[in-house]
Image 1 (cartoon, rainbow over the protein chains, first blue to last red):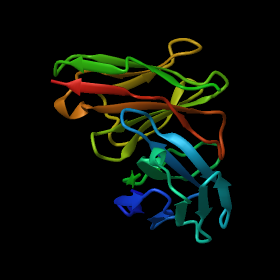
Image 2 (tube, rainbow over the protein chains, first blue to last red):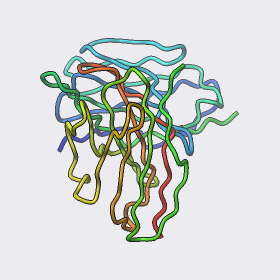
Image 3 (tube, each protein chain N blue to C red):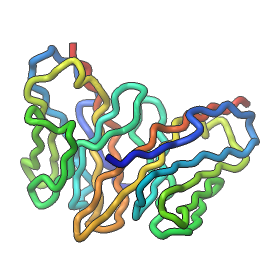
Length: 114
Length: 114
């Protein structure tokens, strides 16, 4: 089945630093999504990308949908302690009138040192 | 802001027992999903549901699993005879319509099978 490769697996950074993480796939997706998950919680949507080449920002977060539709990156600028969590990319392949399920990456665990 | 809710937040059960996990999707949403996340692993798709029937299911969703929308608001996942390996966080998600619509996740039910 389709798999997403997400990297890095974990990051330990200093408060104020910028962060970059990415996902790649061997197959194309129509939609890329980035979620954040905190301990004991469900994934919370950060950014949704719907078109190849699309670059979208949400505050300090910026994400891009790769031109080939096989990759996406998420950048976090000027990190703060509350950015701590696990960041998941998810790809979705919609077809016909139905909605495809989400394929998740394995996550990037972000730790921020004050 | 509307949100997906799930009950119970935690459930402990004996192997072989039946469990029912409950979800209340966002009220104007039409597509419903169940995902699971084994501790420390990625989120995995189980099943999607639309118009009172299953749209898609993964190979994880075998005969011991079933879903139901018993009334206008609840969406349930039943595990008929739980196994140790069913221990995981189970997330419900919903989306508004077909096409490129974002899925919103509930906070999850942590299931522990002893």
